[in-house]
Image: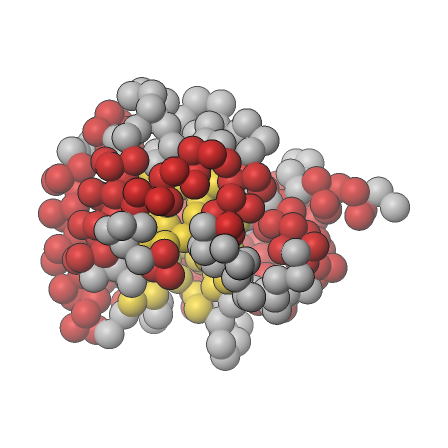
Amino acid sequence: MNLPHSVRLVEVGPRDGLQNEKQPISVADKVRLVDDLSAAGLRYIEVGSFVSPKWVPQMAGSAEVFSGIQRRPGITYAALTPNLKGFEAALEAKVEEVAVFAAASEAFSQKNINCSIADSLQRFVPLLEAAKAAKVRVRGYVSCVLGCPYDGDVAPQQVAAVARELHAMGCYEVSLGDTIGTGTAGKTRALLDVVSRDVPRERLAGHFHDTYGQALANIYASLLEGISVFDSSVAGLGGCPYAKGATGNVASEDVLYLLQGLGIDTGMDMDGLIAAGQRICQVLGKANGSRVARARLSH
């Protein structure tokens, strides 16, 4: 199969990347990060989430971040909204696109959102109806698609069933997440082969964590399967609080390097992206998780 001509990266650093940081991060620093990412040519940025601050304290200031960022034409600024209340708060903040998330594993669903997969999907029905009425597009996430910290292996058919439900409800795109990063290229291709029978490949995205160092291999395998949208996080920020030892998302800089090497267009500026990642890492007082950034910065 031919590789896609262009790829869209969904930058999840400001949301998925920052939400598990222990130290408080100011609204100004979050705004600066989003503005830096906009300047680096990212066309889709997940800015924050409208969840209960009790569960995710880092996302408490999401409305302020949305009002502070400099919105550029042609860029989607999205938010995660777990329920109708969150969606209504996002609408108030003038969010133009939202995302909902479900798990492919029952145990992870219970531990992560305290309900079954079926119940979590039911919760999205009023949200998707409200989004349709407000003409707001909804993206769906499925976590634990290549393994679960509690259930172990997850059957591709189970992933397909959840992805099919989200797509049927009205999610225009379904992002398949390897939450614990145990997936391999062969398993990734086998998964996409099964899921794409229910949801067209042009409606699927990949979200790979790099815990086992396999994220770029899995992205390349997905490209071979005709997938052209990938979630990534600047400087490799983020992990998963419910998945022990799960290091962060794959670094946006490393994915961009792979895509540039394949001659695939992203419209992004590597130097700007590295600078954005380095700046937020300095704010957090942590090492940059991107190998490309570390190599470039050491010159």
